[in-house]
Length: 420
Image 1 (cartoon, rainbow, N blue to C red):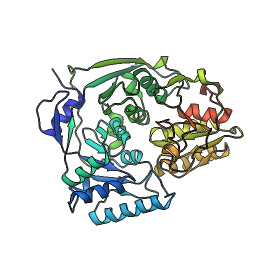
Image 2: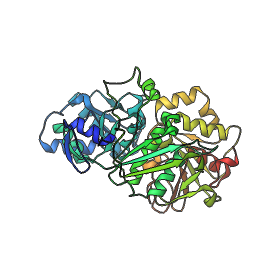
Image 3: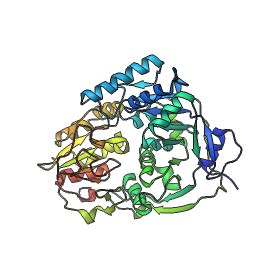
Image 4: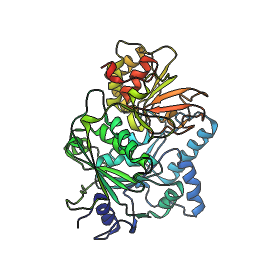
């Protein structure tokens, strides 16, 4: 019997010829990533009693959760991180400047997300890098501190689920709608500690941005990681930017999967996740007319140039509804500058949007768009838990950039096909 992607890569990284689900292996990651929570990790690291990190070149730290610092507490955290980075000689540090942005976007743009690599991050959406053929997953702060100290961690080999995708998206339907459909079907715990492999002819036609959206949100159904086998699109993207050597790891043709699910993209329609669960998924048509106060386009899920272009096409020459705040946050400064060159930002601004500096912004309720009690927001983010955007008495609907843009235009949740 062959091995799945997860089994194969964890066997390789642990020096074993064969592993099976349930086995516990000890591995050294190829890269580890942290963001603003590095301040807490630093304190834990120092409590261990080790003076130097195990490998400064393998550590990547990207400030993004509260940038620029909105409070003195955040400013202090950033200061402590800067001091630690300098003290330890950590070169892969992205500060609050025009080289930064949302950690998962920057990590990929800078060539750290590589096929066949084992990547661990102190953020649950580290699974995004599976779009590049990496085994990437989130871990806790104490685990990250331990890796900084000794360079190793144990992982349980996960069972695997294969999701086969065929067909083409209808007009107005996007990768965000697809992953919401899958999460809605499986439930928030339907893939707990599973490795999810996306395959099929439809995946090959997807852009890198679409693939990142799919892998980004597998954590919302409990998965350990999500992965897509690298192809020429990935190799072309990485040409000239890959930070180190890599080797593509593929599942064996005769690998065993706990479940195999199949989706025909032509049958997917625009969807939303209603408050207060990502698996509370319904067609947009069933919630059409729900009044909104705010619309948000951005985050590590849907803040890339393709997402901003979609919104701009729908909003060009139009004005968003009165009483609605449309906040747009490009996922990185690289995305910001490209959108600026293409005139995308001007179109969005002319429609009434506010453009904020790259970072997580209101996604996790830090700043740049906190909701008031009773307000409703439709967002391209990946979570809509109670209080996620700063207020437990507000409501968050999750949707694609197209649905968010058209809803901002109408003043209520609406189907993008109404404008397209």
